[in-house]
Image (cartoon, rainbow, N blue to C red; front, side, top):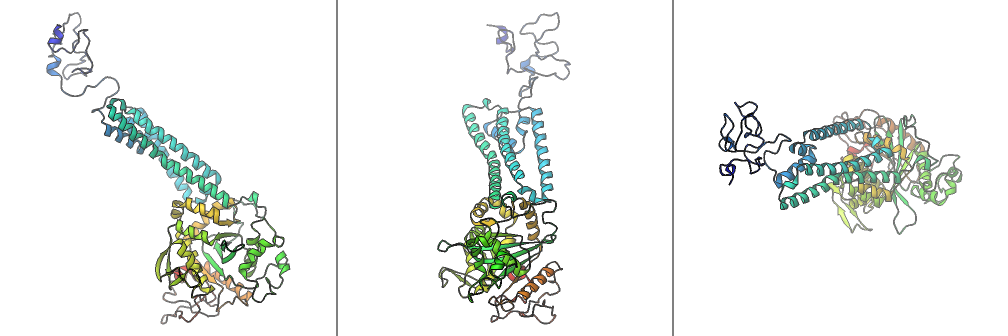
Length: 561
């Protein structure tokens, strides 16, 4: 038997110290300068045996303090990692890149990863602040494609980050069971960190596809003038959109326009006037010299005493393409734009047509519409047998919002128009960017199937910036309904005068503070109601349901937004 073994000397039979013994890798002891790593090393020129301690020191078995050994190379863990702690450090590295590498002692790699992550955060912050002033840039085709590529690259990078962090922690030191558990957990983590990037890339590509499907490029529509991005509105103060609600039911040929509203937007402020025209407005005129103007010089189908309704114009344009120059698929809306534009003496720049049933899906996509219902509204069939929308502040589903704007049970077309403008106004107010982005996939799928417009694809970024202005601006409404305006025998000059007055008032300071507690008096010959300190005039039940007084009124007051 070797003496070194009997006396507890950490050297083996071959005279070499085994790893893991007390004193292995010991650093300099206090009071013993430049103590060698191997305490058994004899002084120069003196032979040593396994029982001979170093001069001035006792044997290792007597003086070695308990605790983990420290090697002269890469620092080891203070404590061995358990399965749970290894998974935790890997998870932390997915949130704070480099954490696992620092824990594993790979400081250079850890600090590099932390630095890269910090640069990415600062870059994202700068880009976000830059785009906040011009959100429309996000809708550009190149921006969307870049976003999808960046999201895909992010998914790959974070997958490699998690995998590298896991490997750096050396899971091979765990037991077999620990390796299996940690491997499964990290695999789930890899999929989890990639999912948000994959969802982002998918959503961005959906946005890109929907935008290119709904909005045609200028190159594909020769009737639209090229877009100058420095001045996309061509120096105009206002831009006018015709919003059409079409009823293309399966039991009916063609499309019947049940809702026709012109939204005139003041570009500088976003203040908007909504002009609602009744579907039964008769014998509208067309611009002189146009093909339709030549065919109907005295008004649309003037020879029919009970015909020639405004909601028939769109389908007429589709059925008689020779009367409307332009591209197939846009002729019907173009005929309606000409008729309404000439009626209001406005140039209608663009149109947007939404199938009424598609609108119901859009309402559902943003979580319903919060709206004030003034009176119970029965809906469904001729007698309202499907249900009743009770009076009060309600959150309507898509189907309820659709029927709230369309039901004629116990009411007439003009009452429907009043409800329709509130539905459109509520949707404009409540379709916030957050609501749209959260449900964009649903909205995009509905819009691709149910919407049509001639707004150029290149104009979308500028339209996005304008729509954000409109949400925070003042919206007023003017309806051309009795008793001020009669649809059977319209006074065209009176309609134009009222239009000019409404546009002028929309850019003037609001008079709400001056007219607090005062409502418009119906039938005041187009005059703006004056404030009265002693009397408040309200509409009586026997009066027309939608009095305008010949002037535009705030939707916030009319609809209780």
